[in-house]
Image (cartoon, rainbow, N blue to C red):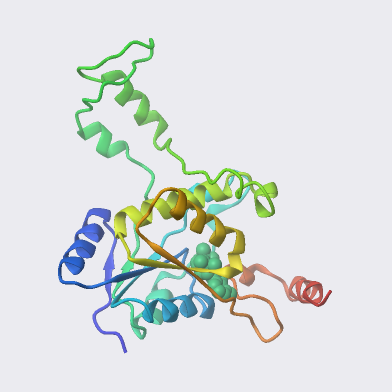
Amino acid sequence: MATGLEIITDKDQMRKWSRSMRAQGKTIGLVPTMGYLHEGHISLIKVAQKHTNLIVVSIYVNPGQFSPSEDLSTYPSDFQGDIDKLKVLPVDVVFHPYNLYDYRDIESESKCNDPIRDSSGSESGDTGVVSCVEDKKLGHETWVRVERLEKGMCGKSRPVFFRGVATVVTKLFNIVEPDIAVFGKKDYQQWRIIRRMVRDLDFAVHVIGSEIVRDPDGLALSSRNVRLSPKEREKVCLLLLV
Ligand code: AMP
């Protein structure tokens, strides 16, 4: 049984924890999730356990992968229920950031000294004031795209989904600095995209794909399944038979 599960919400604190553990010679496994945990997520933790000394589970509903037509606010969540499940597992940290995208506070506090272009297109060089003001309005504007793999299958109906996934996983890798990260093959395209991203961008993270966990009726476990009516569920299971 795990003892002393730590909940970290601040990204600097998360990075500090990882670095201090690495300095002690420990290895770190990351299991990224959007919460509302089920046996599918738990299976990833069990896989991570075979490879590393310490396990970080991130719980973050990533706004970057929802399009305006998908409702981020109704994504199922039960943070306390998740913690109760993780407490009895060999999980050391739950990384639960409030927001990984909004930099406005940081930018209004910081002095932006980069030689950047102002709105007239000239190099502002010394102060960068104009650009800082513009960035305040823009918030986040840097995305990671795995250009070919993101286009097929689910990418056809969800055009911003995979750039959101690749970007948030990049952020999590930069913050947690894990040795390994485990992803479910249930989201097969996502797993392949992350593997390609890691290879193309030389991340020092070993990505492991974990097998699908299904309900007895054959449906893959998913946090979103709670939204299926019994009829819809029956229909999906029939589709699995054809
Ligand atoms: P999610 O919280 O849905 O973003 O999923 C977090 C991670 O858990 C992803 O790597 C998923 O592929 C994985 N996962 C979700 N459901 C399952 C499942 N039924 N079997 C295996 N892995 C899963």
